[in-house]
Length: 86
Image (cartoon, rainbow, N blue to C red):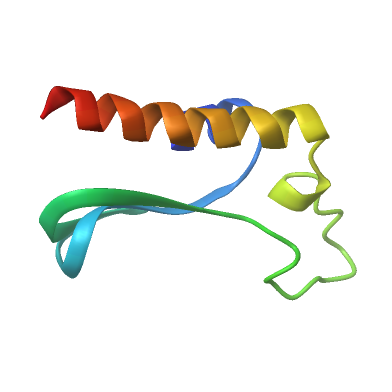
């Protein structure tokens, strides 16, 4: 999902693999203790403070509807793919 968001021009704040305490950090990527889930935190103007000099064109909220739907499908597809591998 993070790759799909980045390809669509949306800023990715952080990527987490797993749950629990952070074991390893490499830039924006965080590996956690239990590899059971994942999370990608995107720039979203509904949750962040807006600044006058930031046009927010790279945030999730200002993207066209088709990009938002594509990200939701990518999230579901990655969850199904992870479930199929086990």
